[in-house]
Length: 405
Ligand code: FAD
Ligand code: NAD
Image 1 (tube, protein in one colour):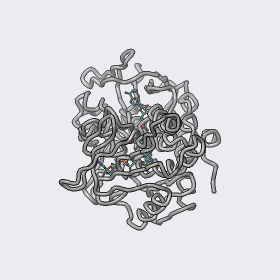
Image 2 (tube, helix red, strand yellow; image 1 turned 120 degrees about the vertical axis):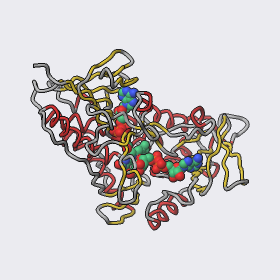
Image 3 (cartoon, helix red, strand yellow; image 1 turned 45 degrees about the vertical axis):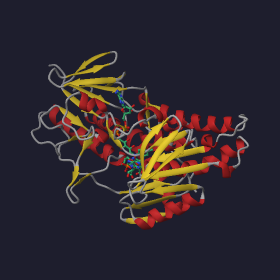
Image 4 (cartoon, protein in one colour; image 1 turned 180 degrees about the vertical axis):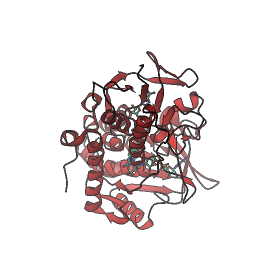
């Protein structure tokens, strides 16, 4: 009898959780599992702000996919997915095609520019390992060049972070530690450096606990960040950004480095493949399948689920992507074994912790608020737990964060 073919696109949190759970649950001859990923490594998207600032080497945030898959059960294909053809049940890759009986789309997020002029062309985004490395090297180059030029250009030392959501704040938390090192290394006066955070909403970390937000803002301000709240980035060009506070307070800011951290959308393959989506995210059925497609599961940042308590979408997080991966794997096993009932997915939100550098953080975990070293310890435990869930103790020992305070 022909074995059912399962194809998983993306080896991020959602994709790797699905595959590692699936490989444990099925026999060698039960299914053909193929995992497709752009690179032969997985990267911890949740650590990319550290690699971007240069506080953690980019090799620390990635590991080989071959270290965590069971090669007797899973074929790994290193390629880039281009489109899904749901009618013919195949995936078009840059270098070939794959047919499937069941497909899992776990291709993660892309930066959301909201069509703002110049952002795509001129801003950086913390979106993958190579982008992170480029940000780190670009910033370092600005510091290295500043003193070599006869005419000192302040814009070389001006860094703008667009958006004070979790990504923007975590990146700033790393930058404030990195900048004194760069100043020291390249003989740059610290007071010449401008670190601006532009946030359209009336507060930093909109919707998060105000007491914790105040803690974060005052810590970052003390280390040199200037917050421009209620101020939106309206445009960007080669020399910097245009921001506006209200209707008429328009200001131009010259900056050689603008990091866009103002939101994400699902992978563009979703819309290209004809799935009905909101900002590239498919509102999945409770069993994680795409509406109208009984053979396609969508997990992670490409999926959208509504939190009925507040009637708003759950934020796209690794926490949810990993939980979805577990349920997705069980539902695939049920389908392969012709079980009628599929499991319903309900996110189990344990909290959220926002780092402010390697030794400080704010967060709510299991209903308890925490700041400082305690929150930072919790964040490292969360990071290590994600490694453990995919690769067990060996992966934690290889890649884990042990610089506990
Ligand atoms: P990802 O984990 O991003 O994986 C997508 C995979 O698909 C990648 O391996 C990528 O290479 C691959 N891929 C993409 N396109 C293609 C293609 N065309 N073909 C083949 N492969 C492709 N969430 C939390 O819960 N806690 C946190 O502390 C946290 N911190 C974050 C910090 C930062 C700086 C950022 C940017 C995000 C953070 N998030 C956090 C959000 C979290 O990272 C995402 O929600 C999570 O990564 C989504 O998982 P995913 O599996 O959908 O995608
Ligand atoms: P976000 O959507 O959460 O925040 C983006 C911020 O940018 C918002 O505050 C928004 O008001 C602002 N913004 C939008 N347009 C703007 C403009 N034109 N000018 C200025 N500001 C503008 O996006 P994010 O921070 O990238 O987070 C993406 C997802 O990843 C979220 O679900 C988040 O919870 C998750 N995440 C979690 C963690 C963590 O748990 N530690 C860390 C990073 C990201």
